[in-house]
Length: 279
View (cartoon, rainbow, N blue to C red):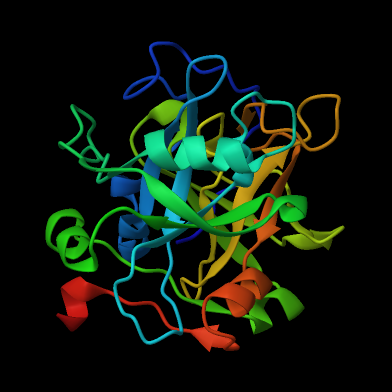
């Protein structure tokens, strides 16, 4: 996928009711970008909060434990923060695990229209977390066989070497405002206090609901990091804030590769797993 530079313009806030049609027009429908098999790894997340509802995104990841198809998902841990005080407690993690919904296949055709009916999984358990890098590993409450049969998923791979030598071209897949699956792209990420940082986007956008969406190496399709937030506000890295391509606003992603090494197999790299191709 080639990123195209565009003229900057401010993004508009999400428009309630959140869902299809509510994202800013600068976002790019993932169905319009082919080939993009890794888009099948991404799901929309709906979680409870003190304000009623949090919207986010997450990604299925392959593991090096020898258990192909295990429904491991990584996302931003701030989606578990029910009271929105910046600290995720064990009770909040349990509450999220009981009530969060993970919707696969929330997509529409490139021309638009109504999205296809999603496959929805209710609930997950927290396997591991790194709150300092806004990352959490979940295992969905669904069997591998049922998920593969109904969601037609793709399990993203990763390579620890990516963080030592960040790629030039990257792209993110996410559900801004709870809308259908969208794609954004950037060029030349760098390391900022342990986070992967993009100095704006070359195309697409991010909005609330994009949090937890995966950042991929465009050349290899390997997972690099999870969208954490932007500095569009005035309080450092914050989940809030809309950004369209061309705006000079930093976007931050919690790195995944060390996290994957620690909790998903202690391997330097794990390839992607595509049940559609491998059977």
